[in-house]
Length: 138
Image (cartoon, rainbow, N blue to C red; front, side, top):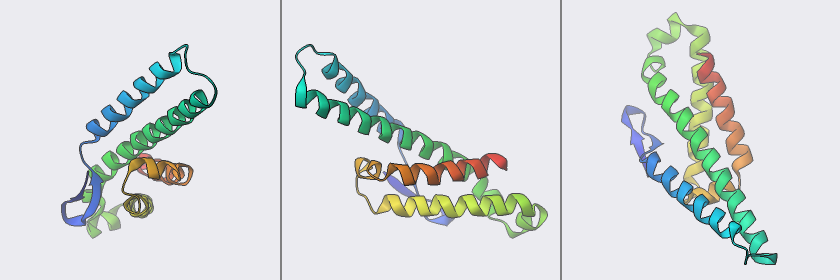
């Protein structure tokens, strides 16, 4: 679901609504399983781990979408050398966020499935937090 974005050729997440809907659906199903009076022991522990994984995936995708939305909006503006010269401080912030976002995308490309990204979600989440902080400062 990644497609290159315009002239940058940076892959961006497409159909994010479908990804979020799938994650939400799986969270609801897992909650229903956990609400069953017949679940206990190892199955309950396994369902709780699965629920935690889904929550981590959902949080990661939400932050990814937020960063991507801001990056897609600001990239054409700060992609211009003229704007970079006119607004050097904001240009530096965008350049840092751009580097972080591209590094994040490179990390994601190593994993074919979102749930594999979640295994490394702490580092990826931190990268996205830094990027959104820089983009919000602009």
